[in-house]
Image (cartoon, rainbow, N blue to C red; front, side, top):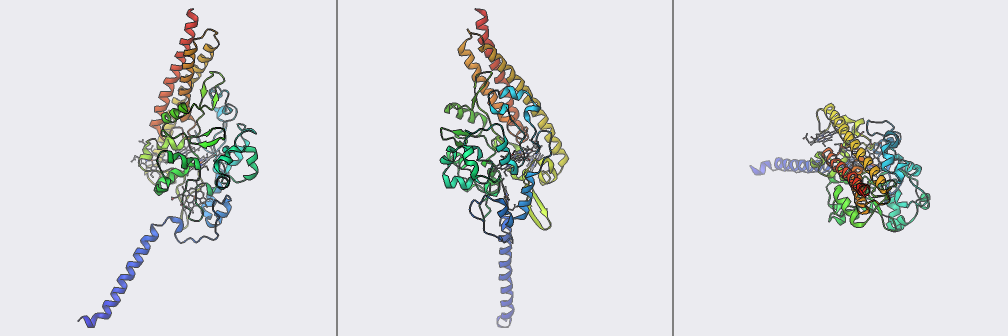
Length: 430
Ligand code: HEC
Ligand code: HEC
Ligand code: HEC
Ligand code: HEC
């Protein structure tokens, strides 16, 4: 029996083994990141290559969508890519930022390809501005940091560094060349994570699809005389942790021209706001899910590198998870409108506090201790308000957190106003 069928047995075993190999191979291929699937790189890319056009030779779909970030110019109700002046839209901002360059020039953000032009054109910078201001605007920085060291880079002025920089944000800000792995390219992010006992090398792919944006979309400051770019995350990334960090460190960005308070200017804390327990973050959704949705070009499926407001592409950005796209887009409007209304109420409270403090300070016999308390309350109120105002989603990334922070900010601003009036009363009753 066995002898007569050995041929059939052999043939079937070969078939079984071969099919096993093919199935294993298919499973292996399916589990590879998309870029490795059957795409052969045409050219070798140098480590930290700043010129995105070279990377684009290997990845034309990602490159052509990335190029669109230069020409997008449409506006949405609270965002979009038109660089309108925020100061024209809301004149209270001029009073809130009195004495800070943001009271002179404050524009709506636009696409990644414009970052270099925009930082060079802003009236907020001058000749003494540190080169650190280039950190998040160009794909030249990763290679320059590696070559010069972060301290030497930061100690150079913006003007002196300019001749070494000619690329806007590009592939080298987010990817490792050739492997195309998402990486931390900003040493300040690596440092901040280490201080929290975290190592990004062990992050999952989905976590990296958010963390890669934290290379830039975070609150930061320039530490010490060398102006080293630093994230204030040692106590955590909630606004209260950040405030505590700055208070302990005795840091302020500027002195308020009207109230005299030592102030903090918050910069685009999208990462901190989103990761502070938002519904989407808790559900494992990443920044790239909404801002870099998968797109099809014939048989190719790739991540759109046309990073912009998801309100321009709700079907791709939200439709992968939400069946009723119109409903969630309507929800965005309701969330943003209510956060905006609350934000303006906080601004009114801040303006009232600033005026009261300024008036109190004008009396020679003002209660100085109370006046100082009022200034501290102004600082505490405005740093909270700014955490929501400087965050670019008008609350959408984390509505509950935004409204919680604004409620605290309004309360602190009214406390500042009352404290200033108390400081005056003392003088009046004498
Ligand atoms: C669930 C979807 C979603 C996720 C996840 C998400 N965003 Fe957004 N984001 C939005 C929406 C919606 C807006 C509001 C756009 C508008 O008002 O036009 C927005 C606005 C923005 C803006 C301002 C855009 C503009 O047009 O000016 C930036 C910058 C931004 N997000 C960055 C991030 C970063 C960084 C992360 C991750 C830390 C993130 N987003 C996570 C949906 C998302
Ligand atoms: C190297 C720094 C850097 C990285 C990394 C980065 N961004 Fe940005 N992003 C910027 C800067 C700077 C701007 C504003 C550019 C301007 O206004 O000229 C910006 C603008 C944006 C905008 C507004 C675009 C528009 O048209 O209004 C969105 C949305 C955005 N980024 C999302 C993201 C997301 C999502 C990630 C992660 C996948 C990310 N960014 C990673 C620096 C960065
Ligand atoms: C702001 C950060 C950022 C920049 C700049 C950027 N990428 Fe990406 N890229 C991503 C993210 C996020 C993904 C999704 C990765 C994932 O899902 O693992 C991605 C994915 C990819 C992939 C994998 C296939 C795919 O489409 O999902 C390729 C290839 C790629 N990018 C090429 C490029 C090239 C070429 C450039 C420059 C022209 C570039 N990227 C610039 C963030 C960026
Ligand atoms: C990767 C999946 C994913 C994407 C993409 C996504 N969402 Fe969600 N969204 C969720 C999950 C999960 C929840 C939690 C509630 C649920 O299960 O519906 C949620 C909840 C919401 C909620 C209710 C929030 C709350 O606190 O009750 C709104 C509004 C919303 N999403 C809007 C959007 C919009 C707008 C977009 C596109 C810009 C979007 N989502 C993209 C997965 C996603």
